[in-house]
Length: 204
Image (tube, rainbow, N blue to C red):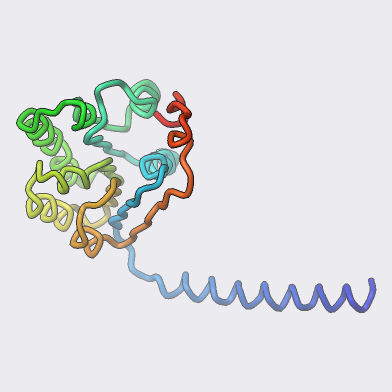
């Protein structure tokens, strides 16, 4: 080994040791064990996909999971088909009306939202659920389909060890302030804007 290579190896080892010390210090400082509220927002693709990644992670440990999809549901999603066929420990509810710009019926959308929220609210009050995903819930706040205080109270008063993931654009600063973790997914490019059709098994 040359002197130059030895210096590089030593420098790398020193850098990794410092990195390990920082990581270990951060892990040691996180000493509170409880469920977390995660908000996945932004105008980019991948919010729901990220949430379903957490669903798969929880299932890997044998935990019970609840999923409520707002907005979506006029056609079966790939997530729903897979979960219903292969994951009996997941309770799955879809609003069933599809996108609001397709229905163009506010009263019907509100009624469907209230029906789905009733399912979500039960999950948020049931400590047997380790993880609850409320997909596209932010739209229910933005469109004022559901009462904000009602939703916030349910999120705040859920069982201590239950984690919840909320996805969707917007939702207001109060929702972000309440969350423990907020990730914003930014669109840089999207195939749809170039005329490429949504892909089954990738986009839905």
